[in-house]
Each structure stands twice: as C-alpha cells, then as structure tokens.
Amino acid sequence: MLRYMVALLSLFSLSSQNVNKEEIKTYEDGEVYNVYSAVVALEKTKGDLLIGDTTVPFSICLEPNSSKRANAAIEDYKKVNKHRWRLGYHFEMSRPYKLLSEKEADEFLQPDKRTGEWRLTPEGGIHHFSAVGFSVDRTIAFLEMDLACGGLCGHGRPYLLQKKNGRWTEYDPAPAKNADGTYIFGSFCSWNY
Image (tube, rainbow, N blue to C red; front, side, top):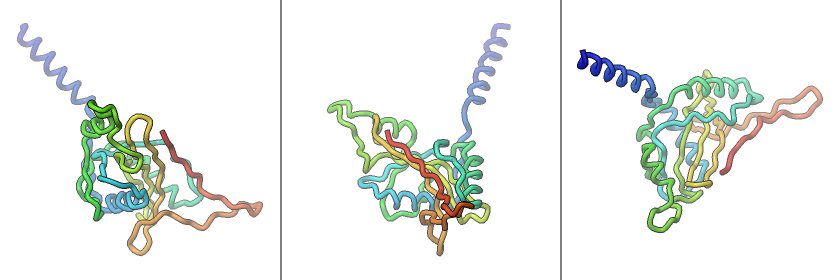
C-alpha cells in the first residue's frame, strides 16, 4: 500500500509539473526572420549581435493605428504572442549573431563577478523579440523588440514594417485626414530603462 501511495504521489507530482511548463513552439516562418533581420538593421547596434532564443510577449504598445492593414497586423500580433516561440539560426544578415538561452542571457546581464563592471552596452545588448503579427496579405508586420544591457540599461519599441519590392522597411502610410482638416498619425510608443 505504501509503495502504491508513493508511486501515485510521484505520478501526480510529475503530471502537475508538466501542466505548469509552457510549451514553446519552434518558429519556422521564414518571413518572420526577414522581418527580424530588417529590425536589427534599423537598430544600428555595434559589437557582437546577441539575440534571446525565445520570443517575449510584450504588450506595451498595442494601440490601434490609422490603417486597417496595420490594425490587422496588431490583432494578429495579439494572437501569435499567446505562445512563446523558439528562434533558430534563420536570420538573413551578413553580421554574425548568437542565440542565447534564457540562462545564458541572464548571465550576460549580470555584472562581472571579478570587476563589478556591466558586460554589455546600450549599443551591444541582447535583443529580445516578440512574435510577429502580419496583415492578412502579409505585407504589413508588427512586432516589439527590446534591447537589454543589464541593470537599468536598455530600451525597446514597436516596429510597424511594410513589404515593398520584396524588402521590409518601416511603415510610412499617407496620414489620414480628420473631418476638421487635421491629420491622424499613428501613435508612437517606446521605453527606456
């Protein structure tokens, strides 16, 4: 009877641990990596390119835009970011990069134990990406990216991109006009720490 109880408790313990573990899916969509690569090119960071290997579901800058296609990309963003995604070595960049596990990223973000100096700079921190939301026709993409460099060092913002002539560039819609003749521009949000 005691063996049965121990086995039952062990099984319950293992099954409850599995329920609490979040399933992280592999991100295989090639267009996502083209979008990420375009964002890194816009960032103009220096040094070794370090990227967190799992997406982060940010929810800071999700206000609607003046464009229906941009709003569709934001709505898709909300759906795809209900899960975390594992990134792979599919970025299209000439610059070398390294994907870091959460444990490796945490180690980089700590001060050096010997000197007490921070290891990373605002120009060369760790990039963390959200999953990418697309418009229905996949010509507009929305994502958020954070660059962390340890302690209270880092920044981030959303990116709204459009695909023109096969390349992802920052979205630049014609501003919409209000009834009173003024123009509506999409709101811009960012963060620094």
